Picture 1: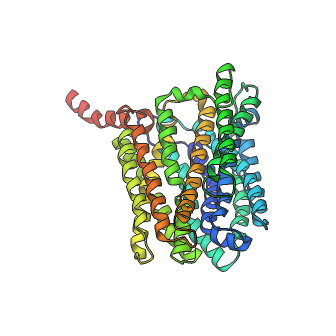
Picture 2: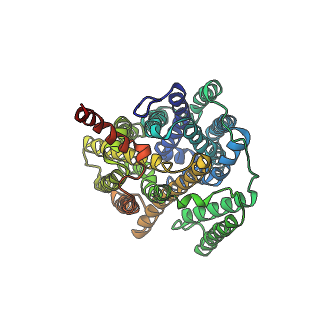
Picture 3: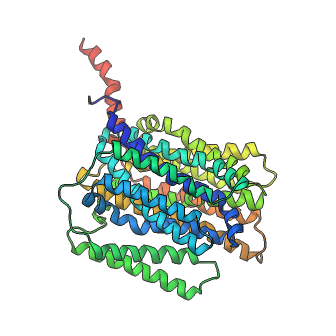
Length: 484
């Protein structure tokens, strides 16, 4: 491949697309369940807000099991682990569709989360190890196109299924998708594995699992009035203690399950922490929109899905323009300016009311999805700009763990804000005012994430974005002319 070429090989194209198809299944499932929560709550006889446990438990399962994914990919081969993950996720989907109580649903979602914990980071490892860094932005765009189709298709399809059939079919539709994914992985994905595999850091896995589980579950319980505050604080403290013990443990061994030394890489650090705060702010958005449109505005799940379709459609449009924008402006400018813009767009959702024209809602969601997609593409690529190839597995594992942790905290915070607002006016039915503070708080979190990107160097991630290469190519004709 020539230095200035923007083309990638067939394998470099197929690997992101196939991995993206697996992400499509996961994103479809995540989007559909947000749309279906009110109907599921009615069927299971549960509080609609309480049913966000179905989302939080899945995200929590991801955060707990992701740390072991990189080691498993190195030990058993990325293709084997990725294919097995699709099988587990598909079986978990069937169990979700067969659930008849909230505990059964939560248990099935945890099983799904275990499969998803293998799919996301291991799939990213496959892409990172088959694509040259100079073509990573383009490859990431290929990767995210099928993944973005999940949210695009999810709301209207899920709403249609829930409105006219049964919510259980939103999980059963994963079966044919999973079978296609298994076939494509078997045919086209190479068996990527490291020749040298280090021993499993089981103690580290136990400490990170207990730590993340304790902290997220405690945070999710705040403000619900179900568990005493003293118990919640104890669980949170225990989780924090486990994480502190892991930090000490990681310094004493040569090959920790989570390599915290990666945080010394500036681009990886800001993409992980700044991106995490941004994801926390955005994480509750599907949950909040589904609740607002259905429980307050009185829309059917299908009508609600058609409106939220606009957000994912905007994200799809951005995938075509993200590489040239990042190449032209650079990561630093995009992450700061676009982060501020998308945060204010999210806060504007607090102005939605039952009398707001639907075309206004569609335009706001379309615009928000467009700029959020650019932010996610930039974050997902910058994280690996300066990571050496030998550390790609560890970087993918740590980044995936942080992403899911912040997303789960975002969903929990969104639900907690609704509970606090309800309690402030004595309970009863949700109103538009209950969502106002939630949208503003989540938007402020996304806004604060831009502060993390200010210290970035002007040319940070230039090898990945192609910005420096683009400047050199643009100067080449002029140089030749002067020589003539």
